[in-house]
Length: 125
Image 1 (cartoon, rainbow, N blue to C red):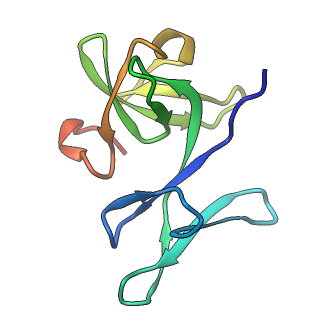
Image 2: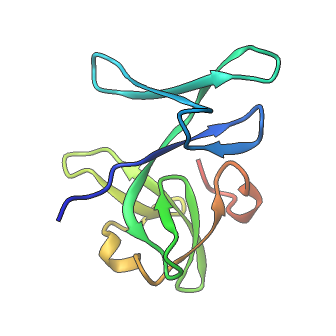
């Protein structure tokens, strides 16, 4: 079974997540790094933070992305890519709580993201 690869980007000017190529241009540089950009309503080019789909769904069937805030086991946590020798998506507060989606996928509920709902989690990066 193959994993679906999807990305989204935070549009600060519009205060909105963007996924559509109509609103965001995703690019990969020669080092293989992803970036995103679009023009603000005042026609200024803005660089946008990129978040990858984890390939997992929450308890309601909602896609879980890097940067999402989740309610899991009575707490609020955020999803972050941990770039290490064994890279993985992690559930975090100020430390890694769970390293595998198998532990939390399907039992968590996406309640927001670190850009639109910072008040839900004071320790999100």
